[in-house]
Amino acid sequence: MRRESWGFGQRMLCLMGLVLLVVVGSLRAQEPGFHLEGVVSRSLPVTGRKMTNVIFPVNIAAGVRVSRDVLVQKVRGIENVIELKALKRDFAPTNLSVYGDDGRLYSFVLHYVEDTTVLDYRVVSDSSGGLSTVRLSGWPMAPEQLRTDARLLASRHGFLHCHATNDGLRLTLRGVYLCDSLLWLSLDLRDRTSMGLGIGGLRISTEDKRRVKRTATQELEITPVFTDRIGALPASGRLAIAVALHPFVVGHGKRLVLEVFDRGADRQVVLRVRGKWLLKARNLLTSKS
Image (cartoon, rainbow, N blue to C red):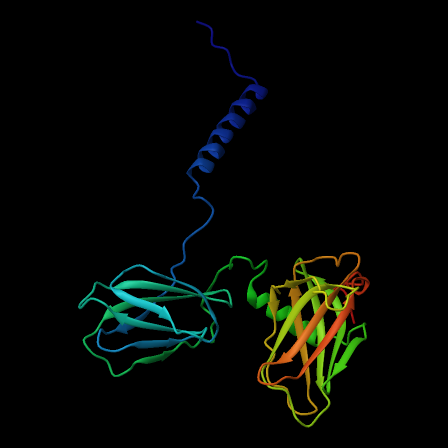
């Protein structure tokens, strides 16, 4: 019987087919392209005789508990403290996840103790920064990134000089910027008196330009996505304020209203901004001013 020998082209075709089968087989055997990295949970003792308090360095956005054997609640009027108490003696160890508004996850394992001398715990971030980050609902970026943007704004000289003065307070819109899909307002607050300003608040809204006497002005309050806390302002002091909003355009016949007030007194200053100033927004990362 006669045997036919393969030519060079046939041998190469056969070899390529074998290589293709090996590649396809290896792709099918590959793992999904990610791995799991364990996050260590901190052990936290809980008793049924006394209330345990946990103080966080930031406000608490949400908390998730697994067992009904432990009472977990926020302290009324305080945003960064939770209370814990055992509802069942010798409950099985369970976990508690707390999400801070800094975009970090704080994970605990709760276990029962009959009694404890330590009732108050303070959460302190390690220098290694090993806390897991999460994306909070309604936040387009991680809060830490927004704080970084706010600090960058504070270092800018600004390019606008729209201002208002009242009760010895001067509020200035120094710049309007776009960054992280948000509209940023860079504000400057100064106290020109020897009184100083207590812990203050900021209110943002839009209003009709034409206001008729004895007629209610149509106002629409705007909730910032992010804003710096307005702390106490010393006498003759200065405070840089950064505010992030979802991008918007002030409609025809309306204007933006920025009101800074002292929560403990009646001092306030109101700055009304025309819509055209918002259209001057610059890119925060490329602008030098």
